Amino acid sequence: MRVRVLIFLLMLPLGAAAQGFAGLGTDADGFAVPERGQALAFPRDHGAHPAYRIEWWYVTATLTGADGRDYGIQWTLFRSALAPYELDGWQSPQLWMGHAALTTPDRHFVAERLARGGIGQAGVSADPFEAWIDDWRMAGPGFNMLDLQARGAEFAYDLSLTAQGPLVQHGDRGYSVKSQDGQASYYYSQPNFAVTGTLTLPTGPVALTGNAWLDREWSSQPLSADQNGWDWFSLSFDDGTRLMAFRLRGGRGDFTSGTWIGADGSATPLPDGLIEVVPLDLTGVAGREVPTRWRLTLPDKALSVEIEALNPQAWMATSFPYWEGPVRVTGSHDGKGYLEMTGYD
Image 1 (cartoon, rainbow, N blue to C red):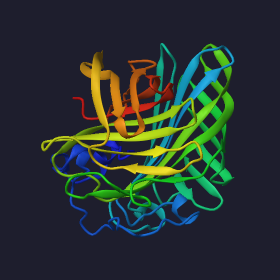
Image 2: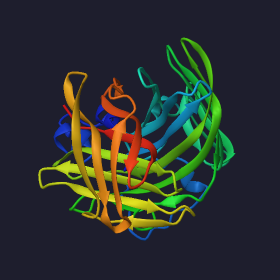
Image 3: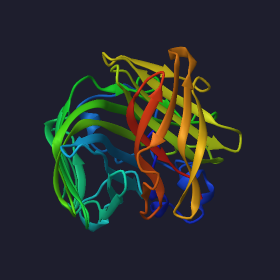
Image 4: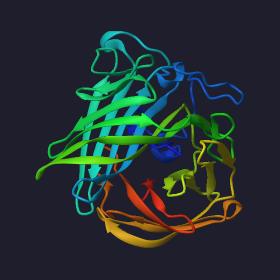
């Protein structure tokens, strides 16, 4: 669901942790809130929305190396606002964080960057598109052709992404509901990038090919106060269909939603209750038990699959830690994808 961002607790007032997971259920307090029926517009909405409190540009990719091994990469730029406007220089209330990761079957590499808005260290421009924090960049002449770079202490990647289908707007034309109380975000994706490029490991460079999924989301209060974590899936099946699905866990039970994406890029919204996700196996990760094998069923599409982590230890040891990594999918539909899990303390 890409309502994901543990980082924003850093930027919220003391006590916000009690207001939904990572403070994402805190009252909007003067920030703009999404409105149903407000049409998304491109390229404008590829850029930043400083009147909203939280926002992200989020890429995950499942890749195969020339060495025959499977890999996963993550590139994320998060924006959080202390006030609903932008100013130049150090007076800017816009704060930025970047996460980058590289996952192999036996290693998981993570890096993090922090920045202040207004001084050029991080930001996003819509047309031509560019998102950056320090020397990490995602940029291109348009949103359908992007170059992506990041590096950490023991890894780097330099990738080219070419869209193979249309943008997908989740929920009601981009208005994505996240709770029984009606909290929502604006949310769209490009779920079908073809990827080529190179990653650099301690053992040397590896040429890569594969597929990437890019999520865009912004809001000011996307969760209810009792929602304490989520499980988010982006799955690409061998027959060309795709699924975005999420489960938000809360004191009043689970809230589920998603989008079924046809091979032609057509999108069918999946309201609460249609998707069922059940954890099958737990793995000890960073001192906690985390589900790393799942059963996901969607009877409306005759879908029943098992989802298993490529590397169960794909822990994001960042300022606010979470689990994120590539997965393999088997069952009625075979494929690959990504899984993100938060709130497993």
